[in-house]
Structures are given as C-alpha cells and as structure tokens.
Length: 212
Image 1: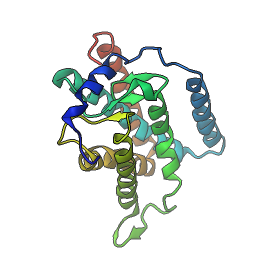
Image 2 (image 1 turned 45 degrees about the vertical axis):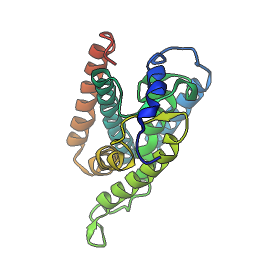
Image 3 (image 1 turned 180 degrees about the vertical axis):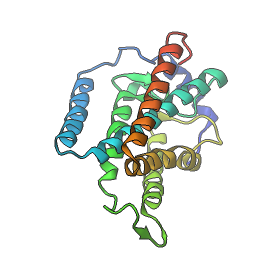
C-alpha cells in the first residue's frame, strides 16, 4: 500500500474512540519504558552526548509532527496517519501509539551510531550527514509501506502515502538527528529545549480542550 484509501475511513473513525483509553493497557508499557531509560542511561554513562542529542532532536521533531497530525485530524476529520487501538497497549495521540513513540525516542540515537566520525567527509561529493538522512528516511518509509498494509496503521487520504512521508516527515526527522549534534552545545540546547517547550505547551492546551 503506497498511498491511502478512503475505504479506511471506518477504521480511522473507530481509532478516535481509543485515544488515551486504558482498555488495552498491559505491562509491556513499563517494560518498553525501562529499555528506553536503560539505553539513554548507558549512553550517558559512556559520555555519548552526541548520540543523546541525536535521539532527543529526532524525538522532539517527532512530537511536533504528531501534534500537528492530530490537529489536522481534528480540523479535517481524518489525520494523515492513524494507529489502531488493537495494535497497542496505549494510544497517545491519534497517529502514535506508546510502542511507536518509544521507537522514535531511540531511533535518532541508534542511527547516529552509523554515521562517519568526520561530519565533513564527503560521499560522492555530498555531505555524509545529508546522504545518511535521506537513506534512513527511505528505509523508514519502506517500513511504513508494510505497516500501512496491516490493521495497525491507517492511511485514509489517497494523496498521502510513502512518497509524502519520505519527503515531508522522515527526511526532516533524520536531518535533525544527524545535523544538530554537529552544532555548538548552545545551539543543541536551544533546538531541543525550544521544541520541548513548544510541544509541552501545545499538549497542555490542546489535550484538555479535546482538540487532540
């Protein structure tokens, strides 16, 4: 499934009723959180601060996108992407489950480990950071094709699918993960801190209002 299908509207409608309900809650929620905390604690102990910055940079962008997706769903009736309640222990927002969000919390950190040590190294005349960002974006987009073919992940709009996800979502995700760690510490803190504040304010305002 490369693009969405209007026939998925009933599934998307059903998913809205499951946002932040505890009907499917189970103890994998705690186990996954424990693994994520262990990963970051280990990287902190090893003083892999660049990796931590990569992970948090992607994660902050991820949350801004998820909030935007939920707002789009509220305004238009359907989000660009939707997760089903049957596939998760907890739906955080209409487009992101707990398991998916925890994956994104470490995706930038993990993929950052694959980068060349020298940020100035060229590959075929191009920045290795940009090429790796595009490559990782392509890989994640292909995985999303599989997800969209399962009951776990729902695309409704026929114009939304793998190519738009690749360009508008995953490339920015990995550009943040791969470029921000090479900036000055002050810039890193400003990028992560600003997005964290924006996301927190949006969640504190929009969730109680019932928008997302």
